[in-house]
Length: 315
Image (tube, rainbow, N blue to C red):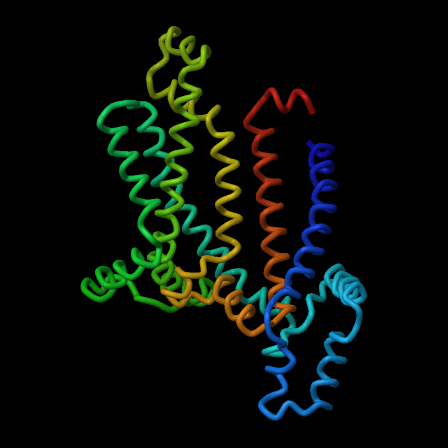
């Protein structure tokens, strides 16, 4: 396992290097000039020149890139052009919010999508299977912003069960924090549950037609043992891949959902940074998101090895 993990980490290094090149290059395509916005209405030429020199915007692109990359390797992600705060500090403020939202959304997705997917596979081509597919299609079709607004009107305005918006840190008030996160997490998890249900059903249907499943049934194992101990365990591999990708997607930030529920996470910060032409913040967010995707895929690969004895034997 350590050798396998080392190989995967070695593959991740050039991947991150390529991503860093794209991140740094593509942000130059953003329209507008952040220095003009920072200089105010008068836009004194001396002030513009000072700001460009301060943020090294007069240097050649290649020099800017290596200067930025050197800072990243030492933990310096640069300074926000708008707030004058270190980018790493801003990311540190928003990342716990996004992680909490992502974890709660994945919880809803798993408790809804996986059991329904298993049930649909076991009851294939029955009314239960058809209803499950209709529910999944509905979850994929309903826009998150519409579902979020409807939940606010019903749960918060009419019933008064949960706060309509806002956020409280889980380290300050855990109960209040969970209350403010339940609805946005359910909105995100509902859409993910539909995708997860379809993939779980597909994987289960393929596994349940295998010879070793028929052998397990012939041995007299109970239907529950066949489904949970044999079928589901072997169907987990593609589901784990999907879970890793979905969690990485959530780490990138759910822009509309965060805007509707006023959640100060990565999504809102990304939108604000793009509109403000805050290059350093955009670069930091995208790079952290890429690292999150790579880590989630690495965890998925490790789960493969732990769940599949045949893979362990080849290492």
